[in-house]
Image (cartoon, rainbow, N blue to C red; front, side, top):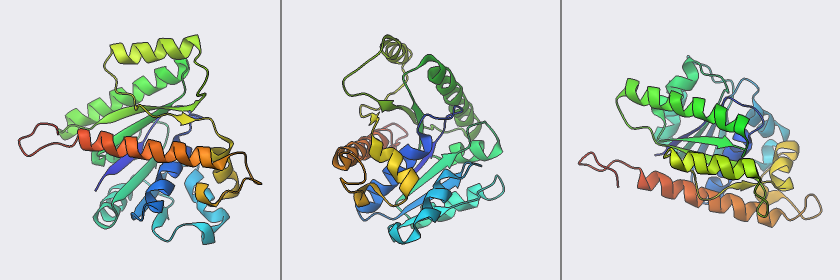
Length: 232
């Protein structure tokens, strides 16, 4: 079952929000999901504590994960649930290395800025080093977050071109800037609980999150090793 790790050494890129939105979509599809909160700030644990009654029964949140517990937490969850999502600390440490070594996919969320691109490059280098250490392929993909569907700055276009020139995979679906994504962190519950009276156009955020989830699953399937050692 896929283990998806979310990593970026820069804060404010939507790492935890992306993990949470994907977990909610997978859970809505009746899949068992474990969210592992390995970020010392515990954003997912705080989300879960706000309104435990509105957490889907098939979505488990594991808080207070350390370098001593992260491997067992991932392996136990992966043996039980179809999806395991790991929200990692920003800085490189032993727990981050362990989680990347266990991952079927590392998602690198970033905004379309040079600073975000520089930090994303550091994460990608870490993934590549861990792949060598574990002697296996560890797929990774950049996901643009907090984007506008209508506007593309010059910086964004430049960075997108540089990523393409360097062969860095970028998911076709972006996390668009939506009030609903901020609201689930602030209010608790899921995207599917939000009402029009609470936030503007929650349906658009749901459609965005569902499209992102489909793109992530498709990317994993494309990068799954075949029996002869190649890629499907």
